Length: 199
Image 1 (cartoon, helix red, strand yellow):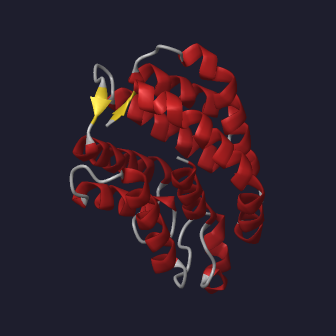
Image 2: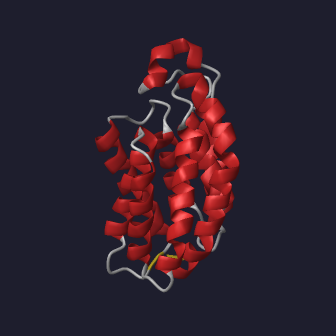
Image 3: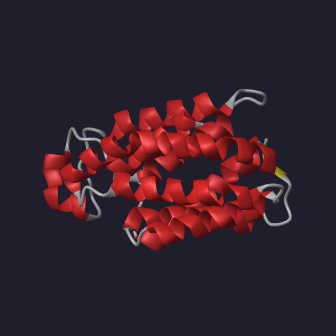
């Protein structure tokens, strides 16, 4: 179950994991983009950390909304914007809801994926974070009740990276490198894996 208490315990771990992954993400992004993905997410994590005291005792939707607001202040980068949109979509979906069980969490990830696709213009198969998000959603939807979800999500995100590594990026700045991206991991897909691992 994802509830306010679980999220409150997870957010500091998420922030620490993002801080740790920032150099790796900058290096990966430098091969295909502006080399600022790690810096963007690092700033998002810092601002979320600063907002944590305000979230004490808040309901699930309010916590997610506050995280979205923190990330919105971090950067105007495309990934920062998508993270903000994802968190705001989750906040809206959780309004009036105390907790999400596994099927509801999988459905939420599907809704977030659809929203991000509409916002960013990417499609499944373009070798972006959407492909990892879709893989995690499917894995959570199919997981047996009672199974710990973190390893399920991490395994799915790793499998997505393995599946797409030898394909070209088809959208964003990376698409300009075309076949040169074959054999390279998409930085956004790696970012999602590192976030899942941090939990």
